[in-house]
Length: 248
Image 1 (spheres, helix red, strand yellow):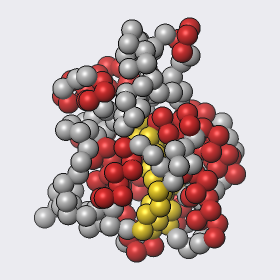
Image 2 (image 1 turned 180 degrees about the vertical axis):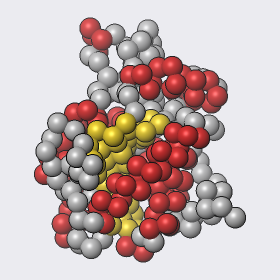
Image 3 (image 1 turned 180 degrees about the horizontal axis):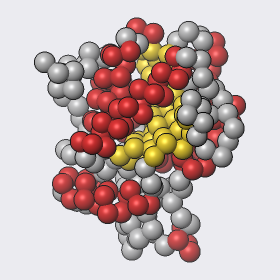
Image 4 (image 1 turned 135 degrees about the vertical axis):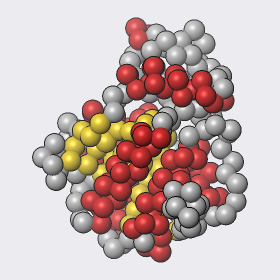
């Protein structure tokens, strides 16, 4: 049976508890497939801060560390520096990474720390109530902006890949989307590249995955995929922003 169909062995054989239609489950599956195919499960530490990512404490069949909101890069730095042979990745959401932990991610990337960050961007604070997040789109409604994000009041969405790619140290920075089979395949390729670069001793690697939030967006799951195609992806263009092997 195809590896793409089977549940990754580094994920426990239990149902996930993400909301119906949430693409966090797809993100976890892709990461798990890459861990399995690279044979990394026994040497991996997953770092998870507060947010929907915290549910990984139930799912991952690997060593895990939970940390304070936004502090995953600092914790991952400590683990990787003290245990350099350990494979370390952080799984973070947008409110966590781009707001509460903005200083953490910027400093870790600027230092070129040798771990990987998988960044799930669903444009909302998914677990804590659907509030305005740094990546909420202009005009997109949230519980704290019921009339929609007003750029003159709330500022513009934060494009993390573009910001991090201005730094010299990172080895790989890419943005992918999980709304179509073709984009999902590209996302897996980017995660594999980011993981491989860490294994090869290259500096900080970062993969942003554009996801959805049917619950807080107030949409049916299929409608969120259309919204991503028409709104999220134009605001957050897909592509590779840094690749040291290709000179990007």
